Length: 321
Ligand code: MF3
Ligand code: CO
Image 1 (cartoon, rainbow, N blue to C red):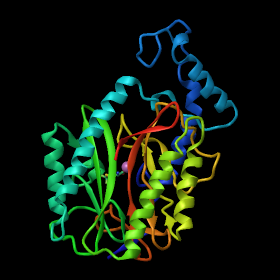
Image 2 (tube, rainbow, N blue to C red; image 1 turned 90 degrees about the horizontal axis):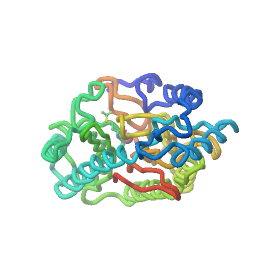
Image 3 (cartoon, protein in one colour; image 1 turned 120 degrees about the horizontal axis):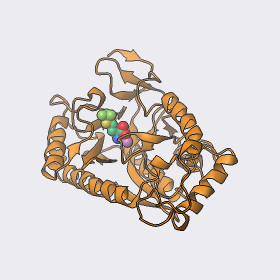
Image 4 (cartoon, rainbow, N blue to C red; image 1 turned 60 degrees about the vertical axis):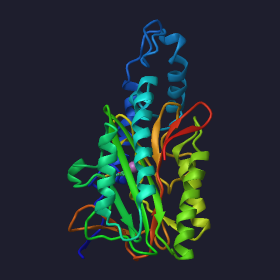
């Protein structure tokens, strides 16, 4: 197999590009149109701005003045958008439940793709990965040392002892959802089982650390700590992302981050928590033939669970899992 270093310019989930976007959005907040106090609020509530989001916007502005990276208005989901994203997430969850009930040793990843396509479209949705930047299938299936973006194939058969991530994303009435789960096939070694379990704990810790008016770096750092305490590493170059109106929107979400850095979390933001945890070193490379699949450089296994959360007044709501 050919190997190449991961090209930092090749997608919005990769660090460099998104860092630029973050800087742009930091500049943007000032450019969000300042509404008249008596104008109807931007959130669609029908209330006057001064009785709705005016204080909220002012609070964001205060953080921005102190030097925080703050979300521009379009990253704050309106109640109508939240309903749309939740309806999409309902399909995403149902698709993963369907995969969970059918996945078994001897099945090809192509068959998983078929289950995802059929279940999604029967419920009126569209699999978001299909044709996304040229991705050829409806779902990502990543086995053992594959970190993410594995492409389903009739030639890839699930074996006893495999761990596999099935990453499902849905478009429904224009709204996006995204979540993934791990499946352990048959007799998985205790080492791999622990990796899968600790990675799930990392996501649970991430969820607990989504608190409005704190930074994404606080959450990402908590996730990282737990992985490191267990002797694992976390992939640096690929992270989570805002999700809802687009498949991949700002902010880019690192799980190797420093407290007090990265974007401020505010109620109404919607993003994924999806750390890729490696049993060995954090180095990765991209499949040069298919241009998608990411592997661990040392060939040791990697695990990932993904949830999509909505930031609330006192924490977050998990909307896709
Ligand atoms: N959950 C993955 C992500 O956030 C889904 C990737 S689909 C692909 O990027 F088409 F980009 F592979
Ligand atoms: Co994702």
